[in-house]
Length: 442
Ligand SMILES: [Zn+2]
Image (cartoon, rainbow, N blue to C red; front, side, top):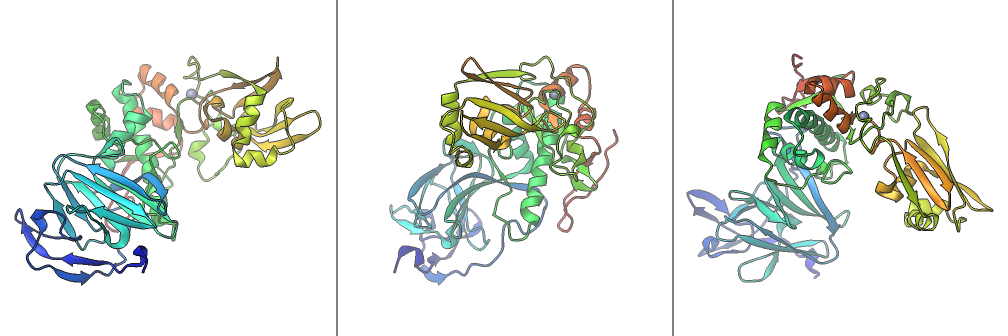
């Protein structure tokens, strides 16, 4: 019988530890949990997904820290100075590992194993383990985290998922450190706190309400969503979280998708080709010129055509279009909208010409192409990219907002400027409703 098809058999016992009844979920891993007469028991998995309620109180968010191939062997160490509570997320079994300050897990062939005190690895029931520090924080993959680390194998996708369950407040506190600049003033941190919280809650509801698409986490920790890198020591940022506690932006009683980027480049979003007309708050008619003195407002990059072609062809999506192109002798924006956003780019050599989606070109060139508010010229054997802004040119312009704070605007007026038609509301989750909107006096 292969290891990954071994029935889950555990030693299960109830013991008294520190005045608390706990049950081991693994073969006695420490002396503290050893028992005199362990019984064998087979646990049946009960379908109790962690994300069953759209939003419950208190609010926790599940952040994907990493996703790895679960078929290939990998080893992971988790440490915490005062030990851990180990738990089966199905809620049946729990264990205290008080004297252990380090846990090693390995995954191979879609099966999760935990190293016990005797040095042997035993498979984890349901391939699903929650690790919570008894107090303080846990350290994992060279970073520190509050909350709980959930480690589980998604057998369907043959993936090892590492997910941090953390309170929404602690999550926003962390995000501020990485999506804002820590030395910006409090009012600017409050702008970002509301934008980031609203964005997070939007993603939480999307993840939890799309039937059949519940992947066990709400949001990724990268700029695919918003950057989250765990604990930090910029404690002054906590004030912005507290002073905007549970504040979000709503539109038509739903949570708004509050996109933001560092610099809008003066692009007027209402002139853009609308990706989603149901989100009018992303397509403001008022122009932000408050970022005009910043270097990102208008930028230039000069690229070598040979290097550029190499980089473009490294992206499979673009390489497909560029098959007939052996060198770049001509490159221009082929189609743009009224706002100046490029949608298609023409790339040619002396014989062939191809049209490539501009978004794919942007993805290939990464930060060398900061925005699709773009002009392209070939001059002196260089590709000259001239653009405005950095990002997607929608929603909050952080550098513009920072300037408005300097001019004395408060965070509510700034949010109203960048997200017109939204209301500032207070999130009040209950067990039955998702969002209970209360208007906040402005
Ligand atoms: Zn701007």
